[in-house]
Length: 602
Image (cartoon, rainbow, N blue to C red; front, side, top):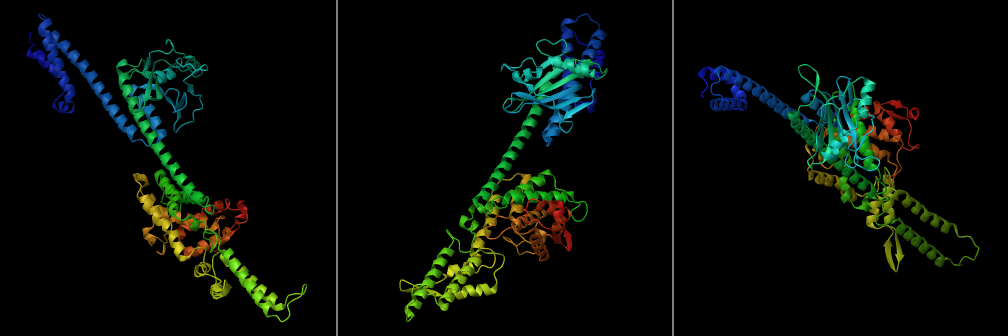
């Protein structure tokens, strides 16, 4: 039997117009196949049935199939949108909230709970709890959840299949319950008690496992009280939607797993970086804690910039990723010191190599003194009798040699500045010789003279170049690492901490415009820590007032960012920094002519 053109036309009238056909070709193709199927069936089994009846039947079937197909298509479209939204979320709290919210919207559920299972724990922890009717929005960015976890095992170590969420996590299978009050096999006494205390009525429930890429259950999504979209009445969760909810849960698990993996890698990288910093600190007992203190101070300076409400830094605000980048650069700023010889890092005195050569100089001076004494005794016409005091000339000579030793001991310690007179005196002493094994030997070797004449610190120019080479090595090492995009500036920031705004720094001699703010903050932190550090081998930590005076001089000569220094002073950061100094070092200081009272902050 063939449908009449009128009946066939009526059926096809239910199909969309051409514009709709272009938008939904899959649905239209399905409609055409339904029409063809009805036509074939009518021709075989409905002989004698009026064409109008067949047309009405076809119209109803096509309409219902179309509504179902469009509904499924909308669900698929929503799933795609949800998947895209979940995959783009970067905040863990927002992600967890979104998983529950999207699942509730998808199923029109009144409430939802997300449980998370940590790797080693045999329990489900409440992560998110939402309920529209009760106005409950807990977990994530909302009110903290203090409810106890759901154990996966009972006290006798048996699996906890009495709790529906624990059962879902243990079996990895969804559970769809039309009414929890009539459900068998599960203990819903806690749900009944909750309803009794709140006046709520828990009814339909859908519990879905969240599986990661290794097919391990990492969480459970529990949806409560599905509502009819037209009447608002509580209904059971449709069985044909369970598969789609499983798909949504799978997308949520993928997004959560991805975020956990990224966070885990970030945590691992951060821990590894801190370990490197600790290793550098431990390489020398004289710089222990330097990297930690510089990193801590740099981060505080960055936060002070963020908190600035007036002046040059008011419009600047570092986000979380930028702060992490600055922090990592600070932790790695001295990574090149891994290649620096330890005898240079630990050089506590000017004459120190493997040992402090001042002891050799002491022996030479003592030999010279004894030679003088022997010569004097040989030339005396009448040797001194026992108990007879030495001559005044002998005493003077002994005092001269002792004064030489005292002088050399003092300048061997290094310091902030060696006078021209002291350098000249060292050079005079170098011309003194003493006799040993029939040969005249210099009191001071050329290398010792060079070291003793170092004007600042304990390193010679050649040794300082080796020491400064750590910056080049830091840059080379860090630029060889594949930092992710949000950490791509770490090598640049770390490699600029010895640059100066006036262009006299190293290794590249960059000037103000070429040195970004994070590098200037790191440079300030490095200088301030070096001035106040109490563990340097060649000098005690400076008083805060001395350090701030030197800092102001460095600003005046164009080494450091003056506005940044003003900010750390005026924001109170220096006063807080002073509390970590030894009690000896804490004192009031002047900055730009104004006195700042540290004693009041104790």
